[in-house]
Image (cartoon, rainbow, N blue to C red; front, side, top):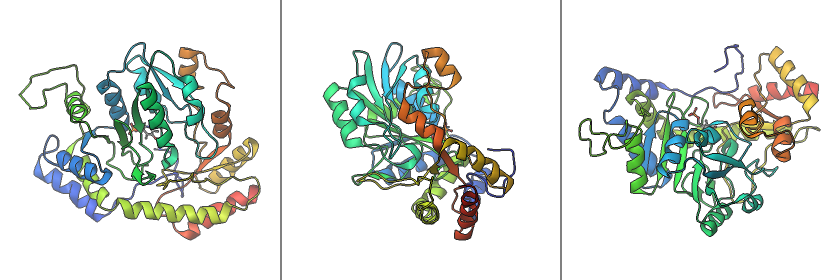
Length: 370
Ligand SMILES: *Cc1c(COP(=O)(O)O)cnc(C)c1O
């Protein structure tokens, strides 16, 4: 993460003594990879999510890549997704020479607009890849309905939305595959790590094989059935994951409390739009992101930095990243809602060690400028 040392960084993992002990026990056991912890973590995560299978991997990006491989999406195929996301949700398609077809977002939840999906479906469309941005669910009932109508796969990028629900059901469990990530800024961490959730035994077995060099899943020594990768999760990460999962619901409640503090400080401030939650949803808050006019945003970033407070424009749209422009010729104006939100959004420090007076202090610095 950022090299500049802020008194209030954007994010910070929460690691307690139980976490440290769990990792230490693995180190002392000598089984640092391929032991029993990753299997235990998978079982517990499947249980938490309410799916039949979970396959641990070395990162969320690795998980997304394997999801694309498992559904045999490749050269010439198109996948409908959102331009307002972290690049990994499109990169996983490019790894397999599939084409991301972007559909603009709606301006309340910043998620893909289901009303605009059908117009983007063509002969080559194979799947929809919705991203539950910042921790709140897309309108999954509508997306599932469209996918059924056109016979499309669904891969959910739930890397920012662990634990959040839509109509009572957890994100990452609506499609054939849901992918989670455990980078240190997520709702829970394993250092680096990810998890693929599915109800399909076949998908679970293919992903398990692919993350382990394509080895046959009944573990016949060095029998490689397909071209695979080393995307395995190590045992220290898995042990940390098991320990973190125990307190996940508590950590999520803490996040929700901090959001409530921020909102009460900023909701009535002119020029600031605080985040809103769409209907039928619970939100688990990967980040706390407000919106401002562009000129105001730059002033605020500068002044917060002077006060030791990190903040960041979260995030530039994918289609305007230099390599995406070069590949597909995208231009400013192609996805206006995403571009507008991207030009206005600002992530503020957000981690569960913050208390009410920290939030107040940060908000006061913002109000000085607004
Ligand atoms: C964090 C994240 C990922 C995966 O990140 P990794 O660093 O590879 O674990 C993928 N998509 C989104 C939207 C994310 O926020």
